[in-house]
Amino acid sequence: MTEKITDEKSLLELPKVMHEPNIDIMPKKLGMIIFGPAKVGKTTFASEFPNSLIIEAEPNGADYCKCKKMDVMSLNEVRAIYKLLEKDTEIETVIIDSLDKIASWIELEVCEKIGISNIMETKKSERFGSQWGVYKKDILNLIDKFLELDKKIIFLSHTKKTETDGHGGILNPKTINIYGSAAVEILAKVDNIGYMFCQKVEGKVKHFLSFEGGLNVEAGGRHPALSGKIIELTKGNGYNTFASLFKKTKKETK
Figure 1 (cartoon, rainbow, N blue to C red):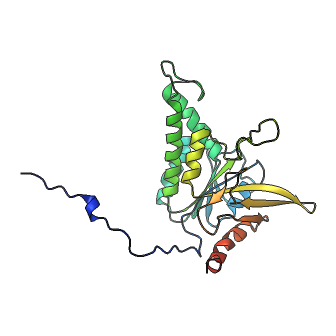
Figure 2 (cartoon, rainbow, N blue to C red):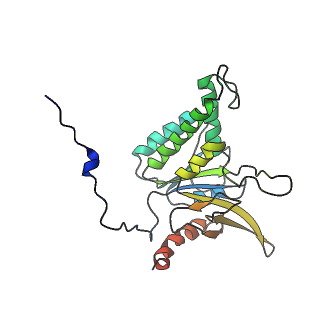
């Protein structure tokens, strides 16, 4: 007796109704990367999100923030916290501080797994280093898991040093401090990439968060409320300024 096979493709239909996104409120799930130079205020800003938890892999990174935090010293601890968050219903925002540090732990784990002393080393008998594929897969898997949580997820990262051509021309834009193609895929996977920087305005140092893409900085936002925006962040009021972008979106789109 022959089993009847149903062609699932034949059941598909093209949509008849236009999708109307609800863009006038901040989504419960919102993935972001915030990167920038050290000590520019990334952790302080992220800690202002309501009901947030900082997974702190940078020593003393959140010591002066009023927040819930869990200091971690290994990937196993990060994975254990993820398991707790899967069942949690109270934490609204999870902050990973920092993505660089987590990536360095993954780097060490990959080296041990493959049997090489450092990530730049190619294993004997291999023409191309298999470690890079494993490294990228493991980072993306970890990011995927956190993004699957029913929460806002903020990954903090330092800025990779800008490369120039010796004449002041920029060869590579400012971006997250992660190796090559892994960085490219991470930026493609996370919807909103904010670059935080300081600037002297009328003699005072001010802090800004930019979702404006350009040739010199890899930033941007898929959410209409964030795309192309640059906001000034004042200490203690950064989150309110950020949240106000979503309340304005409905009027702007009319």
